[in-house]
Every structure is written in structure tokens, then in C-alpha cells.
Length: 200
Figure: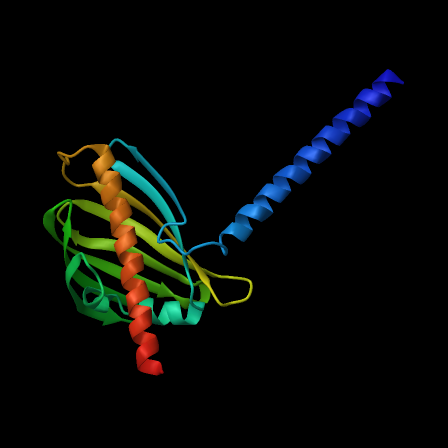
């Protein structure tokens, strides 16, 4: 009888734990679509040796079709960005674009070219650096529509490998990664506003 009671108690504890965990997961998913729309909804930053891995998410209050249209023209970001001074299309072929950027990062002017590969069927954009003074970059932007289709969750993940030893603290490197993402999201929002103003 005691063993039966202990067995039932164990099953009850496990069941309650599972229900609690599932509630937490569902709540976290719900929070992605609630509350004020900040540039950074979540972030993960880690650096080992010369390689930093990162993941940022942001919620955009626009349908995925509008986001995709605005994002498909990275050569226009200089018009909307506070940090990018120049963005120029170097080459467009098939579903790829090569874009030159001149920007200010860590208080220093930087020049790099990025290749964007658009995969509309998967709502993904792959990026990789073709020319960069400071680091090699490989990453992707992934867009997830909200259940009602009115909003979009943007997830950016990347691996950045230093080409030179950076004489700055790790905290500052992380801040630079964070600010680069924030700048991108803000520019995207401004691009969306301009896009909506043109279409209306």
C-alpha cells in the first residue's frame, strides 16, 4: 500500500511538473506577440577564442509579406540607418545580392561586402561576408508570422570569426553586436514606414 501511494505521488509530481513546464512554454510563446515592441525581444551572445555566436529576436508589427519586401532591398539600408553611411548593390544574380556597406562600428569606419541569399519558400535570408576588414560572418535571418498573420518574429543567428585581434573588451564587442542588430531593426522599421507611405 505504501509503495502504491509513493508510486501515485511520483506520477502526480511528474505530471504536475510536465503541466507546469508546458504552461511555461506556451506562456513564453505568447509573450513573443504581446507587450511593447522593443528592438530586442531576446538575445544570446557567447564568445570562445576568436569566434562569437549570437542569436537575436525582434518582433515587427507588420505582416511577413511587407517585411520580406522591405528586407529584399538591403542596398537601400543607408537611407534609413543611423550607422550605415553607404550601401551599394555590387551584383544581383538569381536569388542572391552582393552589397557593399560602409559603416561606423566601435567608433571606427568599417567597409565590408555581404552576400544575401533569399529563400522565400522558407522565409529565410542567408548572409555571408565576402570582403571584411575585421571578421568573417555567416548567418541568417528567419521570419516567422504570428498566428493572426499581422506581426512577424525576426530571428537573426550568426557566427562571427575575428580576422584580427580586437583590442577591445569582450563586453564592448557584445555591445557592438547588439547595436548592429538594433540598428538593422530600426532601419527595417523606417523602410517599412516609407514603403507603406508610397503604397498608400
